[in-house]
Length: 122
Image (tube, rainbow, N blue to C red; front, side, top):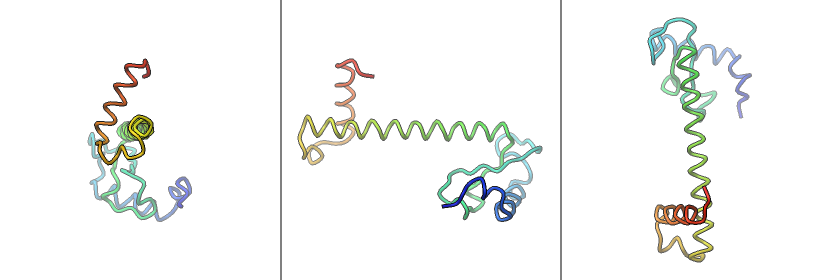
């Protein structure tokens, strides 16, 4: 696994960063700013082996907004995964171990949400 902070100091990253800024014609890809440009990772799956399409050139303000959006999306995904996991456990208790053979996951989540609401859970 690549150490993120160490990688950002590497010559390899600096070269990729320069290429990304050149590819974006030296402007923020969101607002058009030309000063203090930063390079944002759209995802980290290719960290250390990025292509230009894995990156976005942004000014500091747009970069902060993009990072906030990623954090919000990660939290949303975490909450969704947690709800699904809890619904699976509930379905096992209510319908038995073969519940998944006769019931759709979306139906289970809806029924579980109804159960939570009826029982005063958030």
